[in-house]
Amino acid sequence: MSKYLLILSALVLTIFSINSEIRNVPAQYTTIQAAINAAINGDTVLVAPGTYFENINFRGKNIVVTSTYFQSGNPQVINSTIINGSTPSHIDTASCVIIANHEDSTAVLQGFTITGGKGTLWDDEHAPGNRYREGGGILIQYSSPYIQNNIIKNNEAINITGAVSAGGGGIRMGDSNPKVYNNIIMLNKGLYGPGVVLNYCGISFRNNVVIQNTGATSYGGGGALWILGTSPGTTRLIENNTILNNSSSTGTGGVLCYSSILIIRNNIIRGNSASQIQLSGGSVTATYNNVQGGYSGAGNISDEPLFADSNYILQNNSPCIDKGDSSIQYNDVADPNNGTLAKYPSRGGLRNDMGAYGGQFAKLLTDQLIAVNNIGKEIPVSFSLYQNFPNPFNPATQITFDLPESGITKLAVYDILGREVEVLVNEFKEAGRYTISFNAAALSSGILFCTLQSGGYSITRKMILNK
Image (cartoon, rainbow, N blue to C red; front, side, top):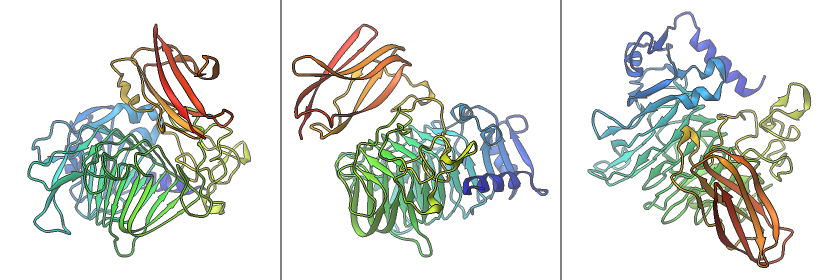
Protein backbone atom coordinates (compact mmCIF):
# COMPACT_ATOMS: atom_id res chain seq x y z
CA MET A 1 0.00 0.00 0.00
CA SER A 2 1.37 3.45 -0.89
CA LYS A 3 2.19 6.05 1.75
CA TYR A 4 -0.62 8.19 0.41
CA LEU A 5 -3.18 5.43 0.79
CA LEU A 6 -1.96 4.86 4.33
CA ILE A 7 -2.60 8.52 5.13
CA LEU A 8 -6.09 8.34 3.65
CA SER A 9 -6.76 5.16 5.57
CA ALA A 10 -5.63 6.86 8.79
CA LEU A 11 -7.93 9.77 8.01
CA VAL A 12 -10.91 7.49 7.49
CA LEU A 13 -10.11 5.63 10.71
CA THR A 14 -9.98 8.95 12.54
CA ILE A 15 -13.33 9.99 11.09
CA PHE A 16 -15.10 6.77 11.97
CA SER A 17 -13.43 5.91 15.29
CA ILE A 18 -15.74 4.89 18.08
CA ASN A 19 -15.23 8.00 20.15
CA SER A 20 -15.53 10.51 17.30
CA GLU A 21 -18.53 12.36 15.99
CA ILE A 22 -19.26 13.70 12.52
CA ARG A 23 -20.57 17.26 12.66
CA ASN A 24 -22.29 18.12 9.39
CA VAL A 25 -22.28 21.62 7.89
CA PRO A 26 -24.77 23.06 7.10
CA ALA A 27 -27.22 20.24 7.97
CA GLN A 28 -26.49 20.39 11.71
CA TYR A 29 -24.45 23.59 12.04
CA THR A 30 -24.99 26.65 9.86
CA THR A 31 -21.32 27.60 9.87
CA ILE A 32 -18.02 25.73 9.87
CA GLN A 33 -16.89 27.65 12.96
CA ALA A 34 -20.02 26.65 14.87
CA ALA A 35 -19.22 23.00 14.16
CA ILE A 36 -15.60 23.50 15.25
CA ASN A 37 -16.74 25.16 18.47
CA ALA A 38 -18.93 22.16 19.25
CA ALA A 39 -16.30 19.58 18.30
CA ILE A 40 -13.94 17.73 20.60
CA ASN A 41 -10.64 16.04 19.78
CA GLY A 42 -11.11 13.28 17.22
CA ASP A 43 -14.29 14.71 15.70
CA THR A 44 -14.80 15.44 12.01
CA VAL A 45 -16.39 18.60 10.69
CA LEU A 46 -17.85 17.48 7.35
CA VAL A 47 -18.72 20.39 5.05
CA ALA A 48 -21.12 20.11 2.11
CA PRO A 49 -20.41 22.02 -1.12
CA GLY A 50 -21.18 25.74 -0.98
CA THR A 51 -19.52 29.07 -0.30
CA TYR A 52 -18.88 29.85 3.38
CA PHE A 53 -17.97 33.47 4.13
CA GLU A 54 -15.98 32.67 7.25
CA ASN A 55 -12.61 33.08 8.93
CA ILE A 56 -12.26 29.85 10.87
CA ASN A 57 -10.03 28.93 13.82
CA PHE A 58 -9.29 25.36 14.97
CA ARG A 59 -8.96 26.70 18.56
CA GLY A 60 -6.47 24.04 19.62
CA LYS A 61 -8.70 21.13 18.63
CA ASN A 62 -7.24 18.06 16.97
CA ILE A 63 -10.06 17.54 14.52
CA VAL A 64 -10.54 16.89 10.82
CA VAL A 65 -12.16 19.72 8.86
CA THR A 66 -12.95 18.34 5.43
CA SER A 67 -15.23 18.70 2.45
CA THR A 68 -16.99 15.66 1.06
CA TYR A 69 -14.01 15.24 -1.28
CA PHE A 70 -12.59 12.56 1.04
CA GLN A 71 -15.70 10.45 0.33
CA SER A 72 -16.02 10.94 -3.41
CA GLY A 73 -12.51 11.78 -4.60
CA ASN A 74 -14.22 14.11 -7.08
CA PRO A 75 -12.06 17.23 -7.65
CA GLN A 76 -15.18 19.23 -8.48
CA VAL A 77 -15.98 19.10 -4.77
CA ILE A 78 -12.78 21.04 -4.02
CA ASN A 79 -13.75 23.70 -6.57
CA SER A 80 -17.26 24.01 -5.14
CA THR A 81 -16.58 23.94 -1.38
CA ILE A 82 -15.22 27.40 -0.68
CA ILE A 83 -14.01 29.11 2.47
CA ASN A 84 -14.09 32.81 1.55
CA GLY A 85 -12.38 34.96 4.15
CA SER A 86 -13.12 38.33 2.57
CA THR A 87 -15.61 39.48 5.24
CA PRO A 88 -13.79 39.12 8.60
CA SER A 89 -15.34 40.41 11.79
CA HIS A 90 -12.09 42.31 12.40
CA ILE A 91 -9.62 43.49 9.77
CA ASP A 92 -6.65 42.35 11.87
CA THR A 93 -7.88 38.74 12.02
CA ALA A 94 -8.53 38.14 8.34
CA SER A 95 -6.84 34.81 7.59
CA CYS A 96 -9.27 32.30 6.09
CA VAL A 97 -8.01 29.57 8.44
CA ILE A 98 -6.00 29.82 11.68
CA ILE A 99 -4.36 26.75 13.23
CA ALA A 100 -2.23 28.29 15.95
CA ASN A 101 -2.78 26.65 19.32
CA HIS A 102 -0.55 23.55 19.44
CA GLU A 103 -2.70 21.34 17.22
CA ASP A 104 -0.85 18.15 16.27
CA SER A 105 -0.74 15.92 13.19
CA THR A 106 -4.25 14.60 13.83
CA ALA A 107 -5.57 18.04 12.89
CA VAL A 108 -6.42 18.02 9.17
CA LEU A 109 -7.65 20.66 6.73
CA GLN A 110 -8.74 19.02 3.47
CA GLY A 111 -10.73 19.50 0.30
CA PHE A 112 -11.49 23.24 0.11
CA THR A 113 -10.94 26.23 -2.08
CA ILE A 114 -9.51 28.81 0.32
CA THR A 115 -9.74 32.37 -0.96
CA GLY A 116 -10.25 36.03 -0.09
CA GLY A 117 -8.13 36.11 3.07
CA LYS A 118 -6.03 39.16 3.94
CA GLY A 119 -3.91 37.92 6.83
CA THR A 120 -3.71 38.36 10.58
CA LEU A 121 -1.71 40.96 12.53
CA TRP A 122 0.72 38.78 14.39
CA ASP A 123 3.43 39.36 17.03
CA ASP A 124 6.75 37.98 15.81
CA GLU A 125 7.80 35.48 18.46
CA HIS A 126 11.44 35.85 17.35
CA ALA A 127 11.48 39.66 17.38
CA PRO A 128 9.40 40.89 20.32
CA GLY A 129 7.70 44.20 19.70
CA ASN A 130 7.48 43.69 15.94
CA ARG A 131 4.16 42.84 14.36
CA TYR A 132 3.60 41.35 10.93
CA ARG A 133 0.47 40.71 8.90
CA GLU A 134 0.75 37.13 7.71
CA GLY A 135 -1.13 34.11 6.45
CA GLY A 136 -3.68 35.43 4.00
CA GLY A 137 -5.08 31.98 3.27
CA ILE A 138 -3.81 29.90 6.20
CA LEU A 139 -1.91 30.94 9.34
CA ILE A 140 -0.15 28.14 11.27
CA GLN A 141 1.82 28.69 14.49
CA TYR A 142 3.10 26.19 17.08
CA SER A 143 1.09 23.49 15.30
CA SER A 144 1.73 20.53 13.00
CA PRO A 145 -1.43 19.79 11.00
CA TYR A 146 -1.94 18.12 7.66
CA ILE A 147 -2.89 20.64 4.96
CA GLN A 148 -3.88 18.57 1.94
CA ASN A 149 -5.98 18.54 -1.21
CA ASN A 150 -6.85 22.26 -1.21
CA ILE A 151 -6.83 25.08 -3.74
CA ILE A 152 -5.38 28.14 -2.01
CA LYS A 153 -5.80 31.14 -4.31
CA ASN A 154 -6.36 34.87 -4.44
CA ASN A 155 -5.36 35.57 -0.84
CA GLU A 156 -3.00 38.34 0.20
CA ALA A 157 -0.75 39.67 2.94
CA ILE A 158 0.08 43.19 1.83
CA ASN A 159 -1.59 45.53 4.34
CA ILE A 160 1.12 47.04 6.58
CA THR A 161 -1.18 49.15 8.76
CA GLY A 162 0.22 48.59 12.25
CA ALA A 163 2.77 46.12 10.87
CA VAL A 164 6.46 46.11 10.03
CA SER A 165 5.70 44.15 6.85
CA ALA A 166 3.37 41.47 5.51
CA GLY A 167 3.95 38.04 3.99
CA GLY A 168 2.74 34.52 3.43
CA GLY A 169 -0.15 35.40 1.16
CA GLY A 170 -1.08 31.77 0.61
CA ILE A 171 0.23 30.06 3.76
CA ARG A 172 2.35 31.26 6.70
CA MET A 173 3.84 28.61 9.01
CA GLY A 174 5.96 29.30 12.08
CA ASP A 175 7.58 27.20 14.83
CA SER A 176 5.65 24.24 13.50
CA ASN A 177 6.17 20.97 11.66
CA PRO A 178 3.19 20.65 9.29
CA LYS A 179 2.70 18.39 6.30
CA VAL A 180 1.50 20.23 3.21
CA TYR A 181 0.55 17.79 0.45
CA ASN A 182 -1.30 18.05 -2.87
CA ASN A 183 -2.35 21.68 -2.80
CA ILE A 184 -2.60 24.22 -5.60
CA ILE A 185 -1.19 27.51 -4.28
CA MET A 186 -1.73 30.25 -6.84
CA LEU A 187 -2.41 33.92 -7.44
CA ASN A 188 -1.65 34.94 -3.87
CA LYS A 189 0.10 38.22 -3.01
CA GLY A 190 2.50 39.29 -0.28
CA LEU A 191 5.31 41.72 0.41
CA TYR A 192 7.50 38.68 1.06
CA GLY A 193 6.72 35.03 0.42
CA PRO A 194 3.46 35.68 -1.44
CA GLY A 195 3.04 31.93 -1.92
CA VAL A 196 4.42 30.33 1.26
CA VAL A 197 6.36 31.57 4.32
CA LEU A 198 8.23 29.15 6.61
CA ASN A 199 9.51 30.91 9.73
CA TYR A 200 11.70 28.76 11.99
CA CYS A 201 9.63 25.86 10.84
CA GLY A 202 10.01 22.22 9.87
CA ILE A 203 8.03 21.13 6.83
CA SER A 204 7.18 18.22 4.60
CA PHE A 205 6.04 20.05 1.44
CA ARG A 206 5.11 17.54 -1.26
CA ASN A 207 3.26 17.36 -4.56
CA ASN A 208 2.06 20.94 -4.56
CA VAL A 209 1.62 23.20 -7.59
CA VAL A 210 2.85 26.70 -6.69
CA ILE A 211 2.22 29.15 -9.52
CA GLN A 212 1.87 32.85 -10.22
CA ASN A 213 2.17 34.17 -6.70
CA THR A 214 3.28 37.78 -6.98
CA GLY A 215 4.12 41.12 -5.45
CA ALA A 216 7.12 40.41 -3.23
CA THR A 217 8.94 43.69 -2.54
CA SER A 218 10.74 43.12 0.78
CA TYR A 219 13.09 40.72 2.56
CA GLY A 220 14.45 39.35 -0.68
CA GLY A 221 11.12 38.36 -2.16
CA GLY A 222 10.75 34.60 -2.19
CA GLY A 223 7.81 34.60 -4.60
CA ALA A 224 7.08 30.87 -4.22
CA LEU A 225 8.65 29.96 -0.87
CA TRP A 226 10.32 32.25 1.68
CA ILE A 227 12.19 30.21 4.28
CA LEU A 228 13.95 31.49 7.41
CA GLY A 229 15.69 29.66 10.22
CA THR A 230 15.54 26.15 11.60
CA SER A 231 13.45 24.32 14.19
CA PRO A 232 15.16 21.74 16.44
CA GLY A 233 14.37 18.14 15.58
CA THR A 234 12.74 18.93 12.24
CA THR A 235 13.69 18.87 8.57
CA ARG A 236 12.67 21.17 5.74
CA LEU A 237 11.82 18.93 2.80
CA ILE A 238 10.59 20.33 -0.53
CA GLU A 239 9.83 17.29 -2.69
CA ASN A 240 7.97 16.63 -5.96
CA ASN A 241 6.49 20.08 -6.43
CA THR A 242 5.91 22.13 -9.56
CA ILE A 243 6.98 25.73 -8.85
CA LEU A 244 6.41 28.03 -11.83
CA ASN A 245 6.10 31.69 -12.80
CA ASN A 246 6.17 33.19 -9.33
CA SER A 247 7.57 36.69 -9.17
CA SER A 248 9.27 39.20 -6.93
CA SER A 249 9.72 42.88 -7.69
CA THR A 250 13.05 42.68 -5.88
CA GLY A 251 15.06 39.53 -5.25
CA THR A 252 14.04 35.91 -5.74
CA GLY A 253 10.84 34.81 -7.42
CA GLY A 254 11.38 31.11 -6.70
CA VAL A 255 12.67 29.54 -3.47
CA LEU A 256 14.54 31.82 -1.05
CA CYS A 257 16.38 30.21 1.86
CA TYR A 258 17.69 32.34 4.75
CA SER A 259 19.90 30.67 7.38
CA SER A 260 18.10 27.38 6.99
CA ILE A 261 18.96 23.81 6.05
CA LEU A 262 16.80 22.80 3.11
CA ILE A 263 16.37 19.60 1.06
CA ILE A 264 14.97 20.18 -2.44
CA ARG A 265 14.33 16.96 -4.36
CA ASN A 266 12.42 15.88 -7.50
CA ASN A 267 10.91 19.31 -8.23
CA ILE A 268 10.33 21.40 -11.34
CA ILE A 269 11.34 25.01 -10.61
CA ARG A 270 11.14 27.30 -13.63
CA GLY A 271 9.94 30.63 -14.95
CA ASN A 272 10.27 32.40 -11.61
CA SER A 273 11.55 35.95 -11.86
CA ALA A 274 15.18 36.84 -11.15
CA SER A 275 16.31 33.50 -9.72
CA GLN A 276 14.92 30.03 -9.16
CA ILE A 277 16.72 29.05 -5.93
CA GLN A 278 18.61 31.55 -3.77
CA LEU A 279 20.63 30.73 -0.66
CA SER A 280 21.54 33.33 1.96
CA GLY A 281 23.17 31.44 4.80
CA GLY A 282 22.46 27.86 5.81
CA SER A 283 22.56 25.17 3.14
CA VAL A 284 20.53 23.76 0.28
CA THR A 285 20.88 20.17 -0.90
CA ALA A 286 19.18 20.03 -4.30
CA THR A 287 19.04 16.76 -6.24
CA TYR A 288 17.04 15.40 -9.18
CA ASN A 289 15.31 18.68 -9.96
CA ASN A 290 14.54 20.46 -13.22
CA VAL A 291 15.75 24.00 -12.50
CA GLN A 292 15.76 26.65 -15.19
CA GLY A 293 19.34 27.72 -15.80
CA GLY A 294 20.65 24.70 -13.88
CA TYR A 295 21.62 24.13 -10.26
CA SER A 296 24.47 22.19 -8.70
CA GLY A 297 23.53 18.74 -7.45
CA ALA A 298 23.21 15.09 -8.47
CA GLY A 299 20.61 14.43 -11.15
CA ASN A 300 19.62 18.07 -11.69
CA ILE A 301 18.68 19.06 -15.25
CA SER A 302 17.60 22.31 -16.91
CA ASP A 303 15.61 21.07 -19.91
CA GLU A 304 12.23 22.46 -20.95
CA PRO A 305 9.80 20.14 -19.08
CA LEU A 306 7.23 19.90 -21.92
CA PHE A 307 3.92 20.26 -20.14
CA ALA A 308 0.91 18.68 -21.81
CA ASP A 309 -1.53 21.38 -20.67
CA SER A 310 -1.93 24.15 -18.14
CA ASN A 311 -2.52 21.68 -15.32
CA TYR A 312 1.23 21.10 -15.80
CA ILE A 313 0.90 17.38 -16.37
CA LEU A 314 3.90 16.15 -18.34
CA GLN A 315 3.81 15.23 -22.01
CA ASN A 316 4.72 11.63 -22.78
CA ASN A 317 8.09 12.78 -24.15
CA SER A 318 8.95 15.07 -21.23
CA PRO A 319 12.58 14.87 -20.03
CA CYS A 320 11.22 14.94 -16.45
CA ILE A 321 9.63 11.48 -16.74
CA ASP A 322 11.53 8.80 -14.79
CA LYS A 323 14.26 11.33 -13.91
CA GLY A 324 13.59 11.88 -10.21
CA ASP A 325 15.59 10.10 -7.53
CA SER A 326 15.85 6.43 -8.53
CA SER A 327 15.66 5.08 -4.97
CA ILE A 328 12.65 2.81 -4.64
CA GLN A 329 11.05 4.83 -1.84
CA TYR A 330 10.48 7.68 -4.32
CA ASN A 331 8.82 5.50 -6.97
CA ASP A 332 5.58 6.53 -8.61
CA VAL A 333 2.45 4.58 -7.75
CA ALA A 334 2.05 1.56 -10.04
CA ASP A 335 -0.77 1.34 -12.55
CA PRO A 336 -3.15 -1.34 -11.17
CA ASN A 337 -3.52 -2.75 -14.69
CA ASN A 338 0.20 -2.86 -15.45
CA GLY A 339 2.58 -2.99 -12.51
CA THR A 340 5.58 -1.89 -14.57
CA LEU A 341 4.00 1.46 -15.50
CA ALA A 342 3.14 4.48 -13.39
CA LYS A 343 -0.45 5.32 -12.50
CA TYR A 344 -1.82 8.52 -14.07
CA PRO A 345 -1.13 11.42 -13.58
CA SER A 346 2.42 10.05 -13.30
CA ARG A 347 3.99 8.96 -16.57
CA GLY A 348 6.39 6.33 -17.88
CA GLY A 349 7.79 3.62 -15.64
CA LEU A 350 7.90 3.43 -11.87
CA ARG A 351 10.93 5.67 -11.30
CA ASN A 352 9.96 9.02 -9.82
CA ASP A 353 8.82 11.74 -12.22
CA MET A 354 10.04 15.23 -11.42
CA GLY A 355 7.31 17.66 -10.44
CA ALA A 356 3.98 17.55 -8.64
CA TYR A 357 2.74 14.44 -10.48
CA GLY A 358 5.55 12.13 -9.43
CA GLY A 359 6.04 9.94 -6.39
CA GLN A 360 3.78 8.18 -3.91
CA PHE A 361 1.50 11.17 -3.30
CA ALA A 362 0.80 12.16 -6.91
CA LYS A 363 -2.80 12.98 -7.80
CA LEU A 364 -4.81 15.41 -9.90
CA LEU A 365 -6.74 17.93 -7.81
CA THR A 366 -8.77 19.66 -10.48
CA ASP A 367 -10.28 18.66 -13.81
CA GLN A 368 -10.16 22.29 -14.94
CA LEU A 369 -7.14 23.79 -16.66
CA ILE A 370 -5.67 26.01 -13.98
CA ALA A 371 -3.10 28.07 -15.92
CA VAL A 372 -3.28 31.47 -14.25
CA ASN A 373 -6.90 31.93 -13.26
CA ASN A 374 -9.17 29.29 -14.67
CA ILE A 375 -10.02 27.85 -11.24
CA GLY A 376 -13.45 28.99 -10.19
CA LYS A 377 -14.29 30.17 -13.74
CA GLU A 378 -12.52 33.50 -13.31
CA ILE A 379 -12.57 34.78 -16.87
CA PRO A 380 -10.17 37.36 -18.35
CA VAL A 381 -11.77 40.62 -19.49
CA SER A 382 -9.95 40.89 -22.85
CA PHE A 383 -7.96 38.96 -25.43
CA SER A 384 -4.27 39.19 -24.55
CA LEU A 385 -1.04 37.63 -25.73
CA TYR A 386 1.72 38.24 -23.22
CA GLN A 387 5.40 38.56 -23.99
CA ASN A 388 7.00 35.15 -23.85
CA PHE A 389 9.23 34.38 -20.87
CA PRO A 390 12.14 34.21 -20.96
CA ASN A 391 12.90 36.44 -23.95
CA PRO A 392 15.48 36.19 -25.47
CA PHE A 393 15.40 32.41 -24.98
CA ASN A 394 17.41 29.29 -25.74
CA PRO A 395 15.91 26.92 -26.65
CA ALA A 396 12.64 26.97 -24.69
CA THR A 397 10.18 29.60 -23.53
CA GLN A 398 6.63 29.88 -22.22
CA ILE A 399 3.80 31.79 -23.91
CA THR A 400 0.76 32.95 -21.94
CA PHE A 401 -2.52 34.18 -23.42
CA ASP A 402 -5.99 35.21 -22.25
CA LEU A 403 -9.30 34.19 -23.81
CA PRO A 404 -12.36 36.08 -22.52
CA GLU A 405 -14.58 33.88 -24.69
CA SER A 406 -14.51 30.20 -25.62
CA GLY A 407 -13.83 29.35 -29.24
CA ILE A 408 -11.52 27.90 -31.85
CA THR A 409 -8.06 29.16 -30.99
CA LYS A 410 -4.82 29.03 -32.94
CA LEU A 411 -1.39 29.86 -31.52
CA ALA A 412 1.39 29.57 -34.06
CA VAL A 413 5.03 30.60 -34.50
CA TYR A 414 6.34 32.18 -37.71
CA ASP A 415 9.80 33.05 -38.95
CA ILE A 416 10.85 36.49 -40.16
CA LEU A 417 9.66 35.63 -43.70
CA GLY A 418 6.17 34.84 -42.45
CA ARG A 419 6.49 31.10 -42.81
CA GLU A 420 4.68 29.00 -40.21
CA VAL A 421 7.29 26.99 -38.30
CA GLU A 422 5.15 25.44 -35.53
CA VAL A 423 1.50 25.32 -34.46
CA LEU A 424 1.28 25.23 -30.67
CA VAL A 425 -2.53 25.32 -30.33
CA ASN A 426 -5.26 24.73 -32.92
CA GLU A 427 -8.42 23.61 -31.16
CA PHE A 428 -11.47 24.71 -29.21
CA LYS A 429 -10.50 26.35 -25.92
CA GLU A 430 -12.66 27.37 -22.99
CA ALA A 431 -12.37 30.96 -21.79
CA GLY A 432 -9.43 31.39 -19.41
CA ARG A 433 -5.71 31.98 -19.25
CA TYR A 434 -3.29 29.43 -20.69
CA THR A 435 0.46 28.95 -20.62
CA ILE A 436 2.03 26.98 -23.48
CA SER A 437 5.61 25.77 -23.76
CA PHE A 438 7.58 26.27 -26.98
CA ASN A 439 10.88 24.50 -27.67
CA ALA A 440 12.90 25.87 -30.58
CA ALA A 441 15.80 23.44 -30.34
CA ALA A 442 15.46 22.58 -34.05
CA LEU A 443 15.50 26.22 -35.20
CA SER A 444 18.34 28.64 -35.87
CA SER A 445 18.92 31.86 -33.96
CA GLY A 446 16.88 34.83 -35.06
CA ILE A 447 13.61 36.71 -34.75
CA LEU A 448 10.37 34.75 -34.52
CA PHE A 449 6.76 35.90 -34.28
CA CYS A 450 4.03 34.32 -32.19
CA THR A 451 0.43 34.96 -33.31
CA LEU A 452 -2.77 34.28 -31.37
CA GLN A 453 -6.02 34.03 -33.36
CA SER A 454 -9.39 33.53 -31.68
CA GLY A 455 -12.88 35.02 -31.88
CA GLY A 456 -11.99 37.33 -34.74
CA TYR A 457 -8.97 38.72 -32.87
CA SER A 458 -5.36 38.41 -33.97
CA ILE A 459 -2.39 39.45 -31.81
CA THR A 460 1.31 39.03 -32.56
CA ARG A 461 4.42 39.21 -30.35
CA LYS A 462 8.06 39.23 -31.39
CA MET A 463 10.37 36.62 -29.84
CA ILE A 464 14.14 36.36 -30.01
CA LEU A 465 15.83 32.97 -30.21
CA ASN A 466 19.47 33.44 -29.18
CA LYS A 467 21.58 30.30 -29.39
